[in-house]
Length: 245
Image (cartoon, rainbow, N blue to C red; front, side, top):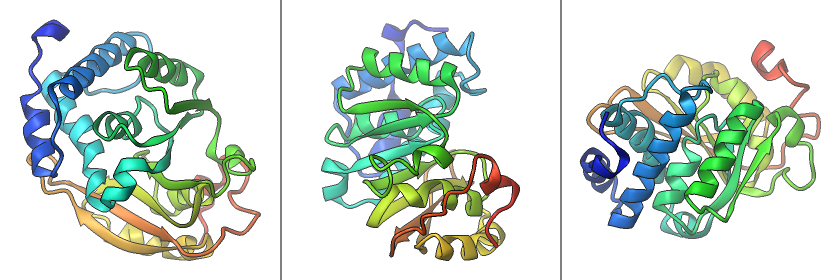
């Protein structure tokens, strides 16, 4: 494999331009450094099965940056966000690298993954990013986190109904939830409609990701219309085991 200094970010740069994002050379170098940290840590911590540079640019970096399609210029310049189930830092870290005015929290329940996230943020000098080792079902009941964010990102593998319960409690009324999902989402979205409404949200739109290599992806965008009832989210594991009907 080429060394970090030899890697070219052409796929990332060209794809970002399709999304309306202009990356500077300094930002490209940050993405390369992020990749180097990711593959180094991935040797001992299971962060991702996708490790080839070309694939990471598309399936991780550009898939993460596709969230910009659903956000206003104002939000991209200054929004607060929480990345629920951040894992290897997707989409929170790529969004912060591309839009340095954003500030947020990367949350994961696995300490080894949050150790990586902490190291990656240090290496990339991301000063406005907080890392938390916790579960959404617990953290969303803390006053400092409940309904405090402009945006909640979710790229985790879970049904819409479960993700709605794990994200909407974090978002202020008027805020946005962005779920990165497979494009064939209609049936899953229908199953999750009751949960979304119960939790105070509505489906704003479903945006297909129109990038080479990502035609199988879509963004489910929710709007927070009213406060989430205090009982939600339920105790750990319940959102996935017994989704709200």
